[in-house]
Amino acid sequence: MKFKKSALYLLALTAIFGQMACTPTDLSKENIIPKPVSVVPTGDSFDLTDQTDIYVQGESAEQLQIGQYLADKLNPSTGLGIEVKTTSEVPASGNIYLSLSENDTELGDEGYELTITEKLVNLTARKPAGLFYGLQTIRQLLPSKVELATAQQGPWKMATGTIRDYPVYGYRGSMLDVARHFFEVEEVKSLIDQLAAYKMNVLHLHLSDDQGWRIEIKSWPNLTTHGGSTEVGGGPGGFYTQEQYSDIVKYAQDRFITIVPEIDMPGHTNAALASYPELNADGKATELYTGIEVGFSSLDTHKEITYKFIDDVIRELAALTPGQYIHIGGDESHSTKIEDYIPFINRVQDIVIANGKQVFGWDEIALSTLKPNTVVQYWAKAENAIKGVEQGAKVLMSPSKNAYLDMQYDSTSTFGLHWAAYIEVDKGYNWDPANLVPEIKRENIIGIEAPLWSETVSNRYEAEYLIFPRLLGYAEIGWTPVELRNWDEYKVRLANHGERMKAMNISFYPSKLVDWEGTGKK
Ligand code: IFG
Image 1 (spheres, rainbow, N blue to C red):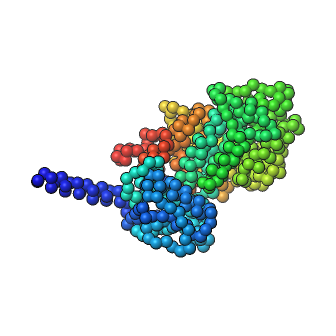
Image 2 (image 1 turned 180 degrees about the horizontal axis):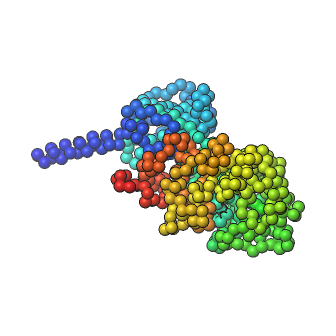
């Protein structure tokens, strides 16, 4: 009898402490990435229960879709059967309430205010994007098992308090090179989901290069039937039909992510040159290429057919791209004379603008005369980016020594290159875009982009080894004021995202610099 009583006591204590242990009450102790601008805890917790629903103010389809996005993220793991409803006033307690109001100008177009009390989760924003980013924070305030696809034990509690949050930069992106190795639509969609979870809002797709042409162009079909038929290493390659590309664009748009498509030129064009003899100076098609050299190809900048080709490609691509930008590449044109390169880039800018879009290009394009809205993507030569600034252009910061996701973490990394640098997780985090190059100031910078070149990776698993966990740091650099950023504090939050990334089925690199077990060892 005595034994039984003490066992019961033990069981009761475990239940109480267990309950307390997973009852979060200090909002300032949460591990939100990107770190919010301000967090004011009120020391209690809110319970998601099977009575909880998501109420959306008004009838807008977009807000209902945002509410449904959250319900779809929470229901599989919580099993609470959360529904999305419309309301004209604040809902009863125990619910989540999403509403828009133009008044709070400090929040801008992407900011939000999340007020959690014991009774209500109240998310407000000026624009739908702000609501969407507030949802990402709600996800991170729940236990990481909320990201699992199968039903988990509760409770589902969130600490109470108020979070006011809004981004520093408007352009917070990544790039996927689908030309060196082709990535299927579903693999691109999973990256889009991951970018959205960390409040990133641009995916740049590098759609053409020496090794492959990946987007169907109906007026030049051989670009994909021939130019898309292989990849680095000689694999089968592949391409997106225009329908598949539009599916990717819509999937991204529904997650407030803009697709920036890139057709690299005049260099990095062997796939096109192999597909159409008439594009070559000597009238002969080149062989398909499956290596990883760069700088050996060039369109013939003297042939008129080259500009008809470009106009056809840009016209079809622009019609598929709701975003304002088309990226024309312009990098490593080592086989194009500079006296040919400059007029070529000038003319291609005119073609893009004539098709209703604005121009992005790698920093070499600053050697040409930049059109008013052309953006220079700084990757290698600061002097090129500075030339862009001197012409009044905005700069997108993708410094290869800090932000190239295809750089190895260290010399033991399974995938990646190291021509620019080894980039461990701390080096990828410890820099400030506005203080990297003195002549490139905060007001010249539209944001940050972390590119993944795919010479050494050919599928989602391998890509995630390079992308994660470094992408979380780039997301924070793009969103959080630099005054609030500090590696020693960030790495503790990052460690807590290990479980969350596992639950999201992300195969991240377990950097030795991060105490993923939370034992305080490192
Ligand atoms: N530089 C090339 C990429 C790719 C990269 C690999 C740019 C703008 C090296 N151009 O980065 O095509 O090969 O790290």
